[in-house]
Each structure stands twice: as C-alpha cells, then as structure tokens.
Amino acid sequence: MIQYSDEAKHSFIQYLQTEKNYSSLTVEHYIHDLDHFFEFLSREGVKHINETDDLLARGYLVSLHEHSYSRASVSRKISSLKTFFTYLNRENPEFVNPMSYIIHPKKEGRLPHFFYENEMEQLFLACSGEDPLSKRNKALLELLYASGIRVAECTGIQMKDLDLTIGTVLIKGKGSKERYVPFGHFAGDALNDYIKHARGNMMKKEEHSYLFVNHRGAPLTSRGVRHILSKLIEKTSLNHSIHPHMLRHTFATHMLNSGADLRTVQELLGHAHLSSTQLYTHVTKEHLKNTYQSFHPRA
Image (tube, rainbow, N blue to C red; front, side, top):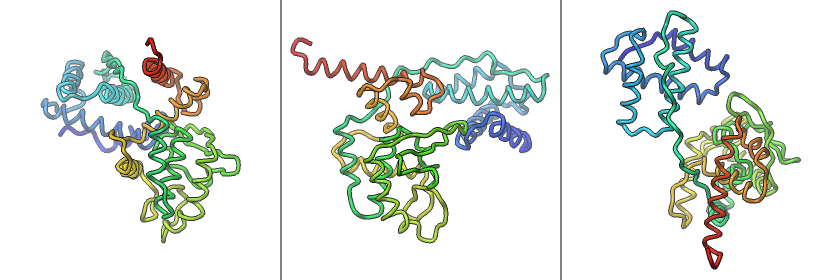
C-alpha cells in the first residue's frame, strides 16, 4: 500500500485538531478516508503521492459509485481529501491539488426518520424498571429526546456540565463549540434518579466524571448507546430499526410540529447553518399532509 510518512500524517492530524478545530471523531473519519484513498492508489500502481492527478481522482470517485457508496459517504470522502490536498499544497505550493475540480454529489432527497409520540411512549415503557441499568437507560433516553443532542455529545457530558436545578446541560459540540441546552422535568427526574440510585453502584472501582457509564462503570461510548437503543426497540412492538440520530430527528420534528420557530431549533441542535435545520420543515409538511389525507373526508 502507498504510504505517506508518519510525520506527514501526524502533522496533518495536528492541523485538523488545532487549526481546523475538529473533534477527535471527525479526525478519525478523515484519516480513515485518507487510508481508503491510498489503498485505491496502491491498486492503481501509484507509488508516490506526487503522481496523483485529476484523472486518478475521478477514477476514485467512479470506484466509490461502483461499490455503491451513498452520496453522503462520497461527499464526506471528497471533503476529507480536499482538506488533505489543500494542506499539502499549503506546505508545498508546487504540489498540484488533484481534487480542486471535483464537485460534491447532490444530496439525496431522503427525509430523516423519526418516531411518533406514541412510539416514543413505547420506548419509555421499555426502559422502566428499578434496577440500575433501567434507570440509566431511562435517563439516557429522556435526555436524548428532551435535548436533541448528538450521541457523541451525550457520551461526552461530565457531571459538572449538568445543572439539575435549572434544567440545563453544557454541550461541547462539533468544532469544540459550546452551547447550553435545556431539558424538561421528565428528563430532570430521570437523571436525578439515575445519579442518586444507579450511577454510584455502576461505577464500582472506576474513577471518572462522565455522566453516563456502562455496566462495568467505564464511560459509555457511542457504540454502547446504539446497543442500548437496539435492545430497547426489541422490547417494543415497533417493527423498524433504530439508530441514535433518530432521537435527534424526533426532537426537531416534534418541536417544529408543536410550533417552535426554526431559529430556536437551529440553536438547540447546534447547527451552524439554517439550511441543516430546514430539512425538518419538509418532514413536518409531510406529516401535515399525511394527517390531512387520513382525516379529511374529501382529501
């Protein structure tokens, strides 16, 4: 496989972390995308990065489409490579960026999946119980639904970030941007119950300040959250799969359906651009349309 030096890789990671201010998860994705591209170059017989040209770049895109990568995945890989080659060009102005003329594919017009209110009730019933894990699961589900935060943001919450008195949590979002997010009394009660009657027992010999922990007492990971939610869905009569982002979609959709303005939802979600939040207006319009067709006698 074609290699770029460990020094170059390390300096690029430093650039992403310090100058671009990207999160560790984003940096991990960028490096994974970069390694994937270099595997392609090796298959093409390329031995040095300077041999990469726009023809190879386009060939890589063709290979992604041939392997049925989604438009979102292709777009992310293009972003990763553009950032990398722009960085190389900055360090060496004589280097020609082979990705400069590559255009991002248009986004797919799929609407985000979300839960209806009665479906959320089933999920909450699925995590009822007096054992520590049930209390943890209920607090986790309540907070994700109440705040619309990303799973990575949720697993990164420290005990000091939580204010149960006024019902807010300090969230460290993408690009290390911080925002305070409110939550209601349902989430507040569940969190208080979990902290008082479950977290201490689950911690065992572990010593850290992360809010959510796994059954061994270690900090809960994003993969752990996905596992918990999958197990909860199995306990319900819901016949579709669940991914953590669905709770974020559900939060935004329910807020807009209940009359919240777009700017407020944008701020709560931590979206840098309003266009990201506007996607949910299509969901609410679709919901209104379906409701109209279901109940109006002359629809």
